Length: 416
Image 1 (cartoon, helix red, strand yellow):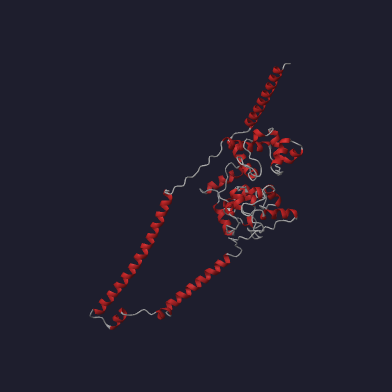
Image 2 (spheres, rainbow, N blue to C red):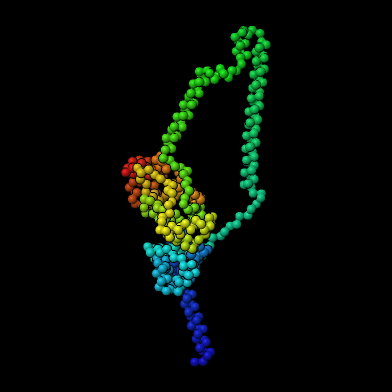
């Protein structure tokens, strides 16, 4: 075999291998579902499980996932790595070991409960984001912005109106005094007035006599009693109400940074909210899924994150201060409201993603809960469980079916 023919054969082999790899990547990408339903389900799964450590476009705790289906060896490899990355790494897989070392030997959480279809749905969301990157719109500042000018004109206009009304009232008061003075002089100069009429016309105001008069005393006692009664009632209604309660926590954890800036899904840390009565407070191990790689906080530097390491090293729990408390006589189930009812966390806890230090946003009183049950409509769409109930409800009412109509105000629902 000549050198020329050998070279030609090597080039053909290389070209065939490259074409095969290219076609394989194309087949793999084509096998990812592209239906809207798959993409939507993939987004939900990604937000709930992956978003804390991964982004499509940017590196976070883990690598950016853009075109991940073209970079990895095979779809079976992705399935295995997602379900148990450590098993793949310990098996000596070169790509997995290189990835593990590149990202400071950070262990990826194992998602062994994910099915093939769910992983493919996540890939479909990633592919959709890769093929259709978000366009960032840059807002151009304009000193002559119409909305700002309108707001300034409106504010000035209102101030002018208020000042004008005050001036008008002052003028009316002055005019009334002048009219009273003129009429008094006119009546005094008029003939035919007896002494009693003149006494009425010229009587002077006496503050002491007014304060000791029976009508004034009655009014004063009535107002004092009403104010005291109102204060007592307000005090009784506030017993056990901790609205606005905002204790200092042992670690300066910011929901504004985690849930707001980095958009970490609440379910990622509060794992019991979808399946348990309690939302549960995350353990330090969950914190370490990210903070084994992230050692410096956005606002607090390294000191606060070191407290997580200390808790793990000393085998001591972090003593978080509970904020939202219900009395022992009340039963509340998170999974019933969040998983079944589809209630958003912010409905009860307020804009948690904007809070540096969490506080109790809502009253959490019986009346507050009852009002919610009376006004919240049940989502009965595509749920055969409610079909008969909806049919019976329509026979008696033309209003929407609410939690109250489903027995939401029965005493035993909350007081078992």
